[in-house]
Image (cartoon, rainbow, N blue to C red; front, side):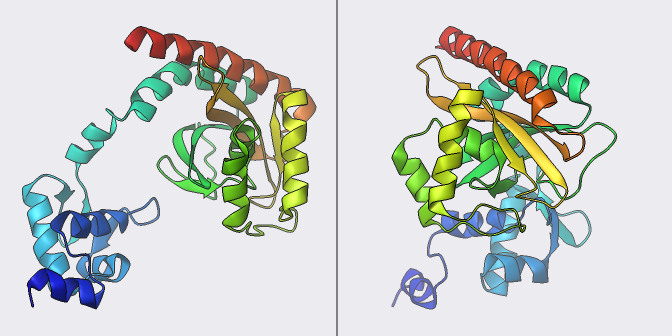
Length: 260
């Protein structure tokens, strides 16, 4: 029996890239540095495999190890800036996020749909960060977030069905968990131009979001204003979010057209 066969039967990823991916996946916004024991536990790989693979990843510039803890290297961070969603989308939309933050004075975010969740691509918090919110690179549920609903409202039925099929976790007493209620909420979004999450992801926190479209009218992302419910009121914030998203859509479409 070959080593790869033994690895497969034991449930361990059989390829070196798969093992490296398992190690990289062990890191997230709440686990930016990991000791060897933590890396073993979170990756699900044997200790000897983690030790050997991580050493090779350090040689390749994928990981750093200051002291006795591992972390993602700056080399991978530099490469992440070449990803289209961070390069084209973020650069096109960032000025409008900054304008929106200047007007609202609470956290603004940019997110894209990643399967049944939303990947946070950019975030501006100012001097009043809210630790309960996901950091850049983190993910949040699509069904109970303004960002997710703003995108889903203009997505095809398959995207909505996938979110429902994945299960709609009740994050707070206000979270919508009924497929019928979610579809009703999504249907109301195009008429007013923005999505509204009132304390469905975090108690005391509300979010208003609007979609960013490509030149062909497909939803590419969404931007949002998120903060204490008393400060995030639809009648005051909604129109500003809608206008910022419309301007961001034009800028993003122009940038993509010019780059291609």
